[in-house]
Image: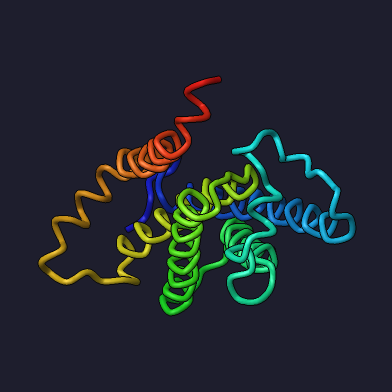
Length: 201
């Protein structure tokens, strides 16, 4: 179904979400990569994002979790977010993709959001520190996954079983509320985990 001219629709907003979010993700991954190399070259180097005992990029980037597949996670971010930004730019240029391509994009973003969710858990409950630029990647990955999924459901590239049809309609109607709750849960978990520090500031 064609979108009405001038109307702010998912099809018009999604390319910008992917382009801007992907570009921010590339930038954050590039900064983290540079900081990691600086730490490796000089063990006494203090990253610009080391602000206090809790907000400490070096604690996160030098952890085992930051090399989940045997190499720095930043390399995954550089490639993955560049691909996301490229898809967004292509859509803005007028590209149209097949259903299989959209399912591939959605699968990649599903992996990404699952990976950052695991990293959130590890950051909070294993490493015990926060990384500003890592949190920026959380901030862009979740909306990219969420709105790509909603777009694919709307366009029929992904079909829900009949029993989940009502849930799909609810998600489409309350997409912003669900995204807000998602972020609020993360914020609450961060505050709860580090309240012993933030509560005494």
